[in-house]
Image 1 (cartoon, one colour):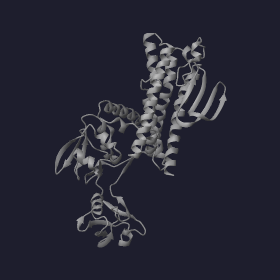
Image 2: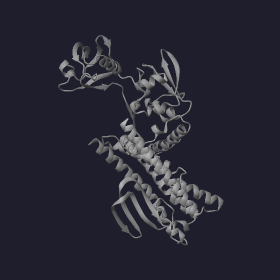
Image 3: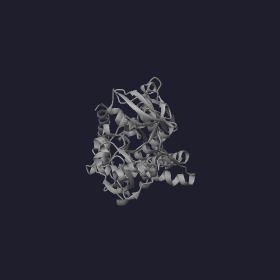
Image 4: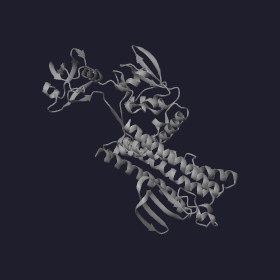
Length: 437
């Protein structure tokens, strides 16, 4: 069932984005009087089709893309027979270069607008939930990567790249993780210490085993829900209890408590618990996996910032274009060899895993908005067979006044298709490799 939910979200998200992208091409083409032969979401085999006027509308079985077939255009169909004849007035190649440029930009523009609109809606409707930096009174707990970087348990992060930290989530901001020369400033034993961000941090975080956050707020906690029939229930632990120590060692913070349980896996422990105004001693058996059977409730207070529609528009727009900026910085790291491409590139399986195995509307639309901006960015790359490749050739034509020959465009399209198919094969193989290993 978990896999079904992941796949369903992937298909729904891609169907929405691809459908809108191709709609942008189709509407601009029809606007300039070009004949649109086919509008397709998904690739053959055909599931459904209906012809309305001059256009066949098709739904394909393979939901990994889509296309619009415009008369007189060299595209992925490689149908070049019609190009041997003189251009017809309704053909793509018969129109002025500026009109053809708008048609090729149509899909990208629609994806950008889609991403912006979704981000604005989410910002206005849900606001922004965050942990104020001042709430992280007890510092952070680093995992192995955090320790490698230089963090220590109890460090208080006060600034990122010299800018005072207001929202704890900014510790994981792309500016911090992708900019060259980034650094954290922490308060440690009454002194301020600068911790530089290594250039390969994103590479390390991309490892399957290390996807957890490299530092997390140190959490005081209370017992929230005790699992019926568990060792915690047998010991007499109750919701609302505060665990003070385990075997005489302080366990006021959840990271301390968790470490002590793991240290005593399979053994019996004694816990000192604060319950109302009394202190009680409880004995519990620890399972082999280092648990006793209760859910903890973190005691740090989160804040929510509400946005008016006037505030949501610039905030959502900034968030949308932040995805483009992040992609540019990410590509820069790949080209400089600071990030392994095999860890940075994901195919359909990786994207499905991002959606997750539970359905949540906020998460679904957040990921869809992000993918819409990524789709716009990727399609704008100057690679033949992508919209950006067509834009590159059309820009050359408008500047030089010379149109590339149909033979050149046909061969460029073939090269681009080989590159794209190779990239897709690499992404899918990479997904499978990461899933297995």
